[in-house]
Image 1 (cartoon, helix red, strand yellow):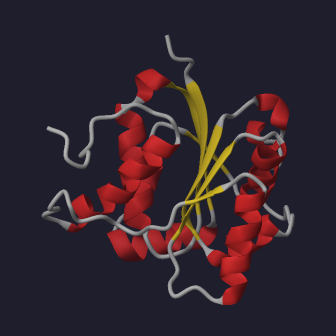
Image 2 (spheres, one colour):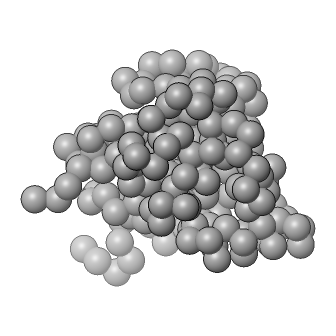
Length: 189
């Protein structure tokens, strides 16, 4: 029997709210593998979600939501034993603060905790092109044990909609998080 995972989902103000929405939708479907999901959204994330998706549906998910400055959230400490943190989408500002140990909000503090505890951090970076500063920050986070998973969709599954394209990234993230799912696999029936 697989041990159920405790997952932090951090949503920043980078463009790509569809990735966050699809991840939350998928986590709802995989709840038999999950003990707890804690969500933290920046103010910009809510604004971008409203602009890109035309709704405030982030309020409709039955997960534990925390304010971006709530340092009393369980995952602000390693003792809470959250296994995985997924930052989706991950702005370059957030990545830079994580890379340099600047824990000035719950997102960067939780990432700091996950890295220091040698647990899994997955940063779904969305900005493009990358400057040398971005590349160096990705290198630093990778060397600290994080996984940089650019929001670069695949097309070999022949996606038919924007959601299908975005789901190719989200499926990869779910695999990286160690959750079992049914998704398209290259050259498998």
